[in-house]
Amino acid sequence: MKRKLKSNVDWVGKIDWELTHFHGNEYSTHRGSSYNSYLVKEEKVVLIDTVWAPFAKEFVDNLSKEIELSRIDYIVANHSEVDHSGALPELMKQIPDVPIYCTANGEKVLRGHYHKDWNFQIVKTGDTLDIGNGKQLVFIEAPMLHWPDSMFTYLTGDNILFSNDAFGQHYASEYLFNDLVDQDELYSESIKYYANILTPFSPLITKKINEVLSLEVPVDMIATSHGVIWRDDPTQIVKKYLEWANSYQENRITIVYDTMWEGTRKIAEAISKGIQKADPDVDVRLFNSAKRDKNDIITEIFRSKAILLGSPTINKGILSSMASLIEEMKGLRFKAKKGAAFGPYGWSGESVSILNKALEDSGFELVNAGLKTLWEPDDAILQEAERFGKDFAGRIS
Ligand code: FEO
Image 1 (cartoon, helix red, strand yellow):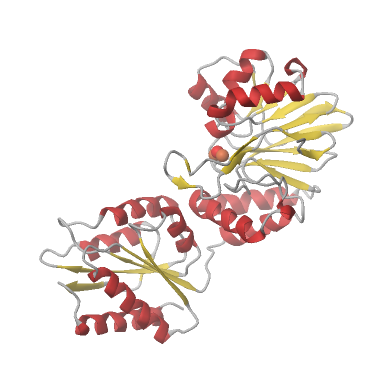
Image 2: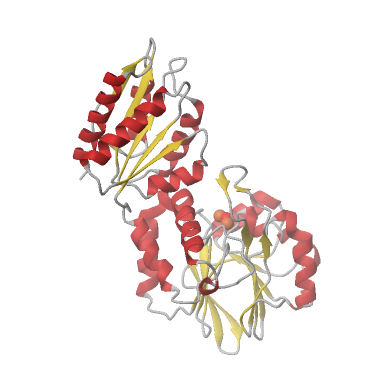
């Protein structure tokens, strides 16, 4: 089946229905993903990005059915991460002299990954490439969105912004466009992608979007490198990104804990009860970090105005599933969110101070010293936890 964006622009990527994890095992992809590659056919023929290495041979075989490979004049590498550059070695065996347009950092990364002396052509923001029929490619550097090498490419005349990872989703679909898919699924994957990958770069995202908007160029489509292409009201996702980049929060409180003998769970539930009594409108959600998906929890945290972390003390530390989550949270550097910690102990009792430090290191404002309780919670401790929850809710505006 031909997958066309416009009569002169074909999708030539790979839909990966089997993918369950991305970035090694770091990012869960419940709905698979795609590696989008595009072929622009004007007087000059341009390939924009490729696919992940396991699909390199399949990609090159399919591409050669689409067009004689020797007819490709230019390759654009918007981003050098292997999910988009992985098929270059296979492709360049066939067309070794074709110029590869990328940023200066892009060349460094491609050389670092593949150790090949390809024909790199370095571009900067505002540089253009004529492709005939009065059309041009315009390059826009987008450093740290999300790697130092990232860039966007804009196709004049057709008004397509090839944005690579930005505005993407890990979302396999045989439909090519945003208006054809389930909107809840689409937005659920879009916000998860933003929360887990782009959160640390939010200030840069706001700046880059405003820079692109100030160019006042028409955008008919935003062709991402993962998931579906935004053609119906394409700026809807740009507006969402501006919202998400601006210390995003909803009226939610997320409680994340791990538990050995159910004590931490009982305390978590008592705290939740207290919060709901103090503020019946707030959406309180509880997650056991050992049982629920880490990236889904991160998305819940991203959507929350405040969080509570709970763990019993074990070997002067915390349970390992919480430690893993905290490592992720520290890197993401959330903004304008509040937090507190809780945890039972038997003798040494370090968990609450460890969790407090983790919250601060992850950018959360600590609202109190935390709730530290001895041994198995009885009714008195559970009532104390409920009061703790009420007090916590009162401190979250
Ligand atoms: Fe989809 Fe940063 O790679």
